[in-house]
Length: 287
Image (tube, rainbow, N blue to C red):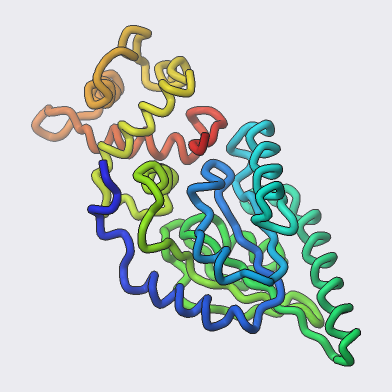
């Protein structure tokens, strides 16, 4: 399935890209939020280009949804490949490691202030941009950083509509930006991973296909037993065609339309929702 055939890059995405590009000259630190389940697939290459010569911090949000070994791998990967000055795993949902993030922000902003003051500037404001793809948890993270509901929070991709400047404390301001995808994915797998985690709206996707791709990944990653136990399947069902496995999920869990036909769409939504809510185990999709 090719994600390039789907109209997933609407006009507001381009406006957001232009907004970030225009405001980047005002920014000192770029805090890029990525999804710990898909750290590579959710890292927008445009942000790396725009953030050149800025202090860069990558935040692996939703880190409680994957194993620690995966987190350690990606932290090392981003540092070794010079994607960021600092990398930290957090959970904006639970508050895990937010204090550590504060420390990193303070450290980087202090370094920036000292450089500017050494040039003769007396009053220095450090500006932080929070950026990332839709539905990665940026607004919830901002609420954690600021300590109150300063940014609107939604669970639908594209909820944050425009840029918002938020004062964190004296001398430190934060710019919240809407979620932004990029015009062309490097591979179908990147688009598929974004779809599975909900970064692309379900309404515009062939949802049954996306669910089948997730099932295929679980088989590939030796997680069939977890899947089978969740949906009352048998060991031999693993050898079925992916579409037929999804049909069995609907059958074994009594998902029917009014005319008694199988409700495959309900089964697909259930499988995707269960993965997103960590009911199918802790594992990432970027391998």
